[in-house]
Amino acid sequence: MKTIAVIGAGTMGNGIAHTFAQSGFIVKLIDVSEKSLDKGMATIAANLDRMLAKGTITQEDVAKTITNIITYTDIKDGVVGADLVVEAATENVELKLNIFKQLNEACSHNTILATNTSSISITQIGSVVAHPERVIGMHFMNPVPIMKLVEIIRGYNTSDEVTKIIMDLSVKLGKVPVEVNDYPGFVANRILMPMLNEAIETLYNKVAGVYEIDTVMKLGMGHPMGPLQLADFIGLDVCLAILNVMYEGFKNPKYAPCPLLVNMVRAGKLGVKSGEGFYDYSESKKAEKISKQFL
Image: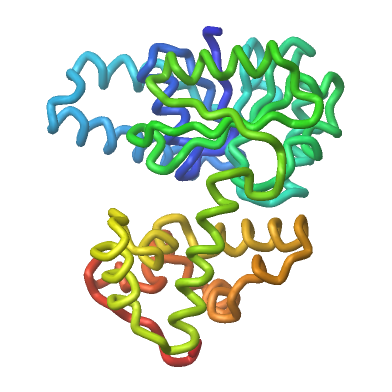
């Protein structure tokens, strides 16, 4: 593999593009918005500068990484010649299905089609393309350039050959791939999201405050980040979307999102990306601020 197309220039998309480009691949970064592409490239440049300042890469590495990325606003143009396409759009099933329908028309049948979905069925996504054996999940962790894990999800039809190619490719990226099967939430979010939801439920029931809940989990359970802070970094809208997928998939009330989470997302309090979630990032990353209107 030499050429990788990445669809979506948001947090995950630009991180995936950065990682492939830094590993020497030609990357075609695709987004419908020039503004999003500019923002994504600015994020990549800023992250590379931080790595340079820490001495983990050289100035030559920075220049080569940026040079390896070409931006596009049209999927058909962007996927031409790609050996692998990694879709990293918003966690919305209809959006992803629409993208894969377009990829089915625009890509060669030999092109491997991967999705960075964190919860949506790989089998369902593969059902809208010819040769679904080439569809696979590559669930990178955020921040992508730093986190080692890649959850490799096999759909019902995903072939052994494609799975091996993607497992080997992940190793070449300096990642640790873990193969899992296609069930709602896979492994990472099937375990993580109920924990985050329970932390939100604990706040909702006024058992303790934001700082107290996060401190218990950090100091008592050895977590590097408290669950409420982690939810802010993931994005509360993303957490809600994943929980909804799991709730629909399992029909089990233990996956039902907490009403507090639902209300916060409706109010636009999405965490770091909006400047406020369980913490107020507009004033101080350490400032605790939850509006009483949600409780």
